[in-house]
Length: 261
Image (cartoon, rainbow, N blue to C red; front, side):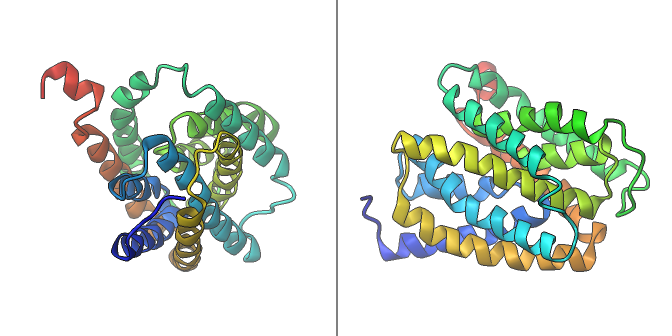
């Protein structure tokens, strides 16, 4: 078992609580927890696995909160959740053979594009719009694809789900947020299962952080339901930009390496 100092554990608990709060509203919790776990000294693969364990608590907590208030019908969305879980499991299994460096190079630009979409698109509120894909086609194509991405890489998954629900499924911002957390919870299950099978997990740290995530997500979901698009939209834009900056300033980012920074 990974030994950890009390001060470091308190730091991880605080990071998990903040991540749970932000993730339940706009996604991007991994932006906080993965660097925190790496700073705590966990090996990269173990940090990814432990992050999936603790994020299960946060996404599960947010899903319960949204479902309890009627913003998402878990039973009706179960087929899509299963597809998200399966896609994520395959992503985690194939992570070692896929061109991850390409994803790390272009992801910041995709996140900025999402931020601009939500910042400047008119009528971005909690009112549902016309759907561009049927629920069946959406669940069989877009959902497993994003789930696969979550398993193989992860950062920005919530933002991609949000964009898909708003732009393709025609959901209002609050409804999209609620459904994003359900499918993100399912994708976390898929990736978690794979990491657990290969032993890339610090159970003690993951569970302790998970409790903090659960509480933070509970508070975040409550605030999102209370304020709707007024809170979700600006926080989503800020989270996407922050995640893009975080990826760009990473010394190991392939783009920085290519440009000689």
